[in-house]
Structure formats: structure tokens, C-alpha cells
Amino acid sequence: IKSRSSSPRPDPILFTSGGPGGSTLYQTKIHRRSPLLDERDLILFEQRGTRFAEPALMCPEIDRARRSGWGTRLNGDPDPREVTAAMTACARSLEQAGVDLAGYTTKESAADIAELKRLLGITSWNLYGVSYSTKIMLTVLRDHPEGVRSVILDSVLPPEANWDEDGAANIVDSLERIFSICRENETLRARFPGLRDRFFRLLADSNRQPLEISIKNPLDGAPLSLKLDGAGIMNCLYAGLENASAIPWLPLILDAACRGESRRLAPLAQSYLGSSQGSAMGMRLAVWCNEEFPFEKPDKMLKPAGLPPELARFVQTAVPVEALQAWPQGRPDVRENQPVSSRVPILIAAGEFDPDTPPKWAREAASHLPQARLIEFA
Image (cartoon, rainbow, N blue to C red; front, top):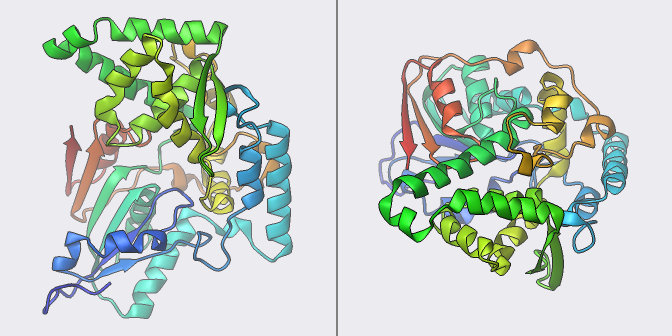
């Protein structure tokens, strides 16, 4: 996308989306309004395996399997047998079509970016990554640093993070931060007295007798009945924490739910179920099974440490746990799980309530990047 300037600066910006599995080109209209275009050209990079790549590893059969529990199973959780069968079928189909699943890694995407720079004849450029793609940009700095003038890392996923071991605890920590603010602020304390204690009573009650709510099917808007236990309610709040515009409303939503107005959870439940649909699931699985699962311990993933007893069944993994058996596993080099060091100027952004890429990971990444400036957004 060309700069609006009549004399743009010579070093463009390359941006790519998160995920893994998100499409960069799908949001081209949004990027055409970017203020970055006031000074520079903006290059949008569609990662291998995503929606507009060839081939695109979309795996719609996995999306269907992940809908198998909507309206019929607790929390709308899918039937694990259907998910396993769909993963096995998708992997087999892709391999029969000549797709080398071992080639879908962060390291290979970083090499693609370096090759693009060479093909376009660019001598200097700036890199911009968000969430998962911050890991891609850090890998470019490690493997292909030539000509990288500066980097923006928005919501960092550092290579050394083991997301699935810490995912559930990170989500609970973000919610605890909201409870802490509601206690510390005099106005909020008066408006939402004892909110944390009341919320955990709601979780305990729902574990004994699941909460029933009516929502709209995220795909077609048809009525859908959902039963939520404590883990299901946390799934709803997870969706709220991922939406910056929803975060200010979470105390109101929680207070209402604790007073029996469970319908207030419906939009969050719809968002949570819908988040399992539409990304390039084959690409996401390939990346995760090639370079994340091999470094993680299944017992830590499936039995997260440090959670309150009301959330004993709350497990969060970036891809369905059935992938441990149903998708080919990689054998990555150990450095794919180690911090990246660089002296390139880097701007790191972190959000206070981010449940996926928490500020502690941004601080960890910054500790290895002496030219980094970290901004934590309240």
C-alpha cells in the first residue's frame, strides 16, 4: 500500500498478522487507513498456509468438528472423538496433496520474509508484528537481521514462552487484576462490593448446577441453548478480556451475573464459541505441533498449576489437545524455545489486561533487547 506522502521515506514497513493462522490480507481495508502511510509504504505479508496463500491450510472439517458440542454439550465443548477424526483426516488430505507440514514453522516464515526483501530489492525496512507474529519478527532479527532498521512488537509472544502451560493461569491473573482494581478504587468498591468473593461463589454454584443461558449461534444467529460450569463462565470472561472495548464493562457483567442476570454473559459466550471458527486451522496446528508442543509438558498443560479449586477443570491450549496424538509432531532445534537478543531499536507494546500475551512476557523479551522501549498500556 503506497504512502500518502509525495516523498515517502525510503524504508517501508512490513506488517503481518497474529494467530498463528490469521490472515493479513483479509484486513487490507483497515490498513489503508493506517497513519503509518503518512510517511512510508506499508507491505502486508500473508504468511504461508493462511487464507490467501497457496496452498491455504484452512481445514473446514476441523471447524465443523469444533462446533459439534454447540447446544448439546457442557460449555459447548466439542466431542473429542470428532475433533480427533477431523484432524487426522485433514492432515492426511494435506499430505496426500503434497503439502509438507514440517515446512510450516516460524523459522520458515521468517525466511520467507527475508526472501521477500531480496526479491523487492529493499535495503532497509521496518518490521511490525502483533501477538504470534511478534515471534516471527524476533526470529527475523535472529536469523536475517540484515537491513532491519527498527521493529514494533505489539503484544509479545517470545519464543521462550510455553503458552499452553501458562495459558489458563495468565487468563485468571488478568481477571484477578480487575478484581484488584475494583477493591482498590473507592468508587468501584462501593459499586461492586465483594465482587471477587461473589464471583467465585457463582463458579462453585455453577460447578454443582450448570448455569443455563440462551445465545445466538455465532454463524447464523439462530437461538442456541448453552450450559456453563465454572470453566465455561471463565471461557466467557476470556473472550471479554481479548476485546479491549469489552474490558471496561466486565465488572458490570460480572456483578449482574452474580445477581442472577446470566443473560449478560451471552455476548461473551457467543464470541468465545465463534473464535474457534474461520482461521487457517491447518497452518495453526502445523506451527504449534512443529515448535510449541515439543517443548511443553502435557501434564502441565492439562492440569494447570496454581488455579483456585473452582477452576480445576479450566484448561486452555492454543490448539485442541487432541492434536498431541492426531497431528504430526515436529522436532525443532532447541533455540526455537530460547530468547532472542538484538541491538536493533525496538518498540514493545503491552496491554495491562492482555490474557494471551501478558505484560510479564513483554518485560521478559525486553530484558534481552538492550535497545527496546517498553510501553505498558493501562
